[in-house]
Image (cartoon, rainbow, N blue to C red; front, top):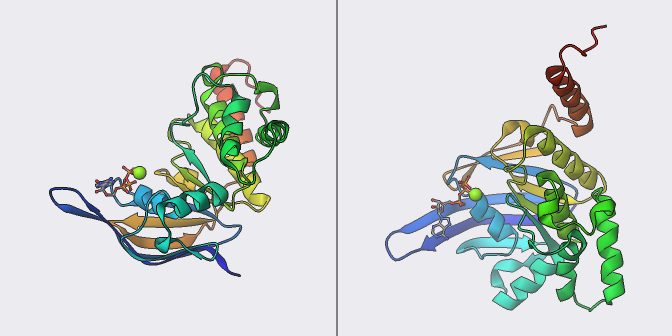
Length: 258
Ligand SMILES: Nc1ncnc2c1ncn2[C@@H]1O[C@H](COP(=O)(O)OP(=O)(O)OP(=O)(O)O)[C@@H](O)[C@H]1O
Ligand SMILES: [Mg+2]
């Protein structure tokens, strides 16, 4: 199978006016269609730098990057932006939704730039379709401050899906969420991955990484380890367990002991 992402001896040096920062130092990595990868590692190890390059938000200073067969390192800024809009959906820790804008309008936003152009009606239909996919069809008119954190992240995931990307990139998507909501979001990612969407996400938490299929650990700009997840967690199972536990904790007198 041809990889979607192929990085070979990738380097990124940030040149600021004082010292250079060598944030990525010779990373080679190959990710196939349908994979679900967690990128882990200490703060400053180069995770976001790597994700920005993979997402065509930034270019490497050395090495090669092929995205879906395209040699990205050689593209101009405009070409890079075009590839990014067509192939990549982004999800961030802080959701990055427009505040005074409804869920539906937030999701429609990437379609405004889609080529070939699609009609307003088609935009609305496509946005409704992905809102349904993330379980928020009844919240289309809500603004971000009328939604819970988990629901806001679902809107952001719907927005990432609306252009039908080859790849979803998520930088600490559960970083602002409580543990139960985090598992719900991982469940949504698992569902999307089951439907064939390739996902690469950054996380600091080993128990979140256990919901993915492959864990890549960065250290000081290099890949320290790269392993398949052996005991993969399934969000629906863990969620049921967590809910039962929370119920028992909140109402000990009502807890039924068999
Ligand atoms: N725009 C930039 N200019 C200069 N140096 C940068 C820039 N962005 C990141 N760096 C440096 O590159 C290194 C890697 O940073 P990066 O943000 O990729 O780490 P990270 O693994 O995502 O960390 P965290 O877990 O804290 O998000 C750090 O030393 C950081 O200070
Ligand atoms: Mg980071």
